[in-house]
Image (cartoon, rainbow, N blue to C red; front, side):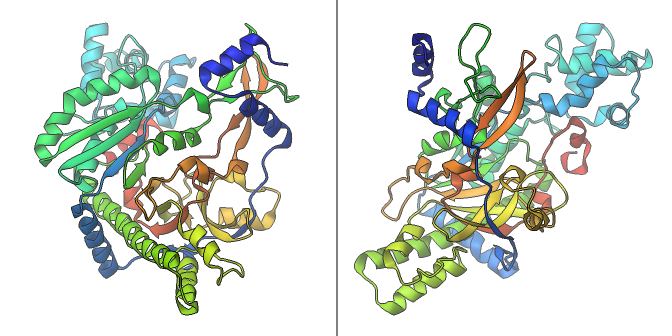
Length: 499
């Protein structure tokens, strides 16, 4: 039974009683594993364009932009950097005072190579009265780390990744947020404007706005464009209730219901509110210095060119279906759906209404890279609710680990998802799709957590590029590994790609 206080709490979040009950029911029933046909590969779900095709796609993208289309770069940027510094937090609390692990030694041996070195050095001088080199000479390594991580210093342990200094330049170091502004100017600007949207956490939004106020004008001047930079926060209505191990609502010490963020799948609501013809999506930490950007820019244009080329053909076929088609045209459309969009109609190739329903959906082209053992999802051919097969990005949690055949597909998959998407979100009549309508709600995920020493079950919504886009048309394009340079730990910044 819900109390009046519970109902008030739900109303404040914008969550209905029905939603709450549905979530509690999901804890009881769990989520089904997906039925797989195969891991996608070159020639079976993944396109690998040659040099001539790449040039054609880049030209198609530039022609599309020249038509005055509205293009937005969408960057999920709410992630805290705390996990980046897990090893250095451990060093602060260790029962030794000098670098001991390989990670700690690598950090201190190369400390001057970090883009934040000068700022950290100045912070140490201000707080400790000594430079980094002097503190190290004294054996006071922990003071250096404390000045990097703690609020008394640079507070990197609490800041979002987007606001850390990643790359050195002659005119000063840059944050990932700034690198995304540069990328926006280089491949996503149209009509002389670069629209860049960041999703951020509530506590950091003012810091992001402050950084934009400091930096955007200089980039606008450098690239001869104007910026339209906007922000949004994850909606409280996308939070999910936590449950006890018996699937009853978990309550805080004050008796209130415990809600947790619903994961990146919640951002489908933010994406749905973006006014755009085409939207690029890329993680905040996957950026490189200017010297390596040409490859990234070229391939962003390639995948965008693939998108607008396929969309143009889809629109042409949708209008033909509206006007009535003979059998030969229906066969041509069915072949496009099967060969170009990798949707196996399973015996419905002559059903015009069915073909129209498959074509008239949001579309995304996803860059995928060769699998090099990074954790995360991959591209698969997967069965849908209606029995058809289409392309999906799957995480390990969506796959039955007891199914040896499926696990072999997952572990031996040739490609990996680096979160490199370009999306078309309007229909053939120019109307925006309502993106939440295309979520597969059966693809959520339940995990075990704890609070205050008590075990609890947490519910994650279908992931943004997994179940939240499950009913989109999806195409995979192989892109070079050089376009994928995530920063998961502080020492990743020492890789050549970030120097």
